Length: 91
Image (cartoon, rainbow, N blue to C red; front, side):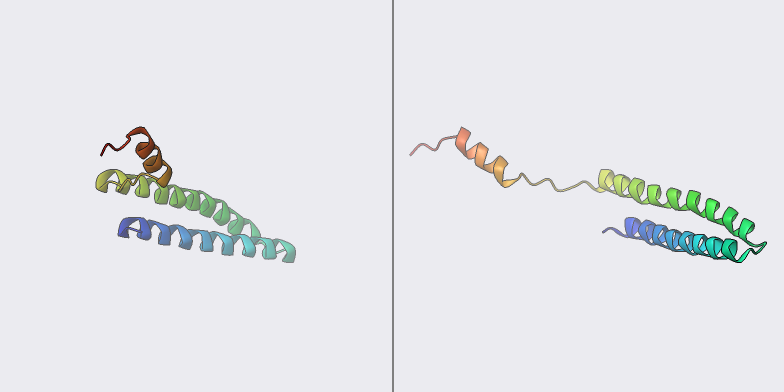
């Protein structure tokens, strides 16, 4: 995995972990009847938006890297087999 894609993936994983922590805290605070449940719930919603942005960043960074650096295209074994069938060898 290229470095820019890896960095975006690490950011996305950290955002997912933080959002999951906020969600669990929101659930536990709601069950406890604490007044902190609402602010943590708002943080969870904001974290969900940020996590979505982070995951899209991984996808876009991956696509941009592929466009800029190219992808090695190797024909599949079936493509090679079909090509051999179409071009018979003459001795």
